[in-house]
Length: 178
Image (cartoon, rainbow, N blue to C red; front, side):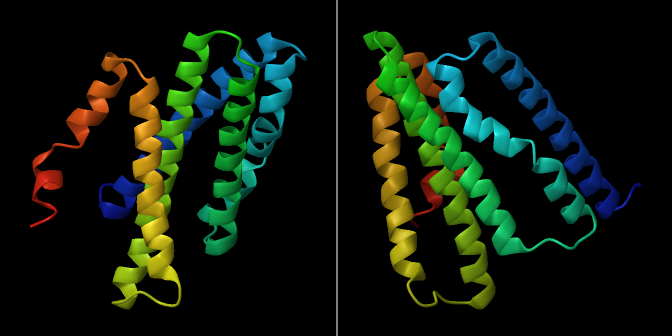
């Protein structure tokens, strides 16, 4: 901890962890209100996985983490929540709730594909080229982002789509094709 770049980074990690812990607490409270109904049963596998996050944090702090294994753990946890969203949507009886769950699922899947793309491209840039089937995986991730953004836009309200639209027209984004 301190004033240098490393101390600054550590503060950011600690701040992020506090935010995650607060979100986990709120999620646990919300799921607890469901009791043992279908929604709670759909969310339990994913929320149960988060109970193991402290072990991953300890490995990060000790710098003894397996990068591929850690990425798989987080990806599997996120996938669990995305599957739960799908199960909740399957159980929805009202069109408004179904639309909102579909929008949420689409945006969440698009964000996860973007995160996976970002991680993949860090490796590609580090190597200076695509290796093996990385280019095909990259194209699949870009296509997933587009398809899932379309799901989001097709089911979200205009007020919900506006922040995404604004984020996609920043100067950096509009210059990217150049």
